[in-house]
Amino acid sequence: QVQLVESGGGLVQAGGSLRVSCAASGRTFSILASGWFRQTPGKEREFVAAVRWSGSTTYYADSVKGRFTISRDNARNTMYLQMNRLKPEDTAVYYCAATSTLVGSGGSLIGALRSGYWGQGTQVTVSS
Image (cartoon, rainbow, N blue to C red; front, side, top):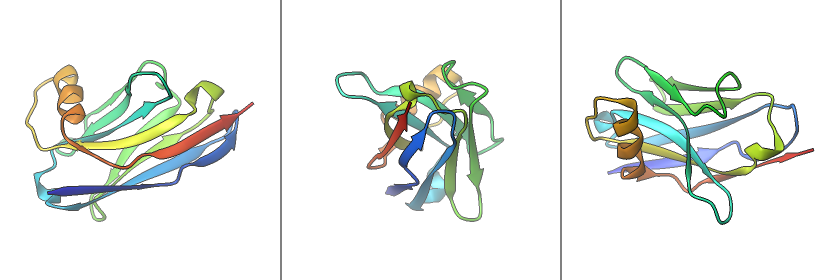
């Protein structure tokens, strides 16, 4: 019902910046929240950031607070993750996620995103 297409991944040096994008299509009117997760080989998929599409409340993992910013473009149904002051440990495949499930807290929102729609992922590599 919802398709997510990501772009913007690539190679960047430590301390640099990168913006990844997630374009939503299909039944986008049903989306209540979207966010970003990342995963490295052999590790669990880690929550990064999320935004509610009504009210624009945002949530961030402690590891990226102050460096990453999540935002939405309502007209284009596109969500962005601006990544600044990148570190080698930020290297991962970044996945876009969205949910149509109504939730009332940050924790349950993250859970709803995990069980919702997913993009294909885009590789972000930060070199030292």
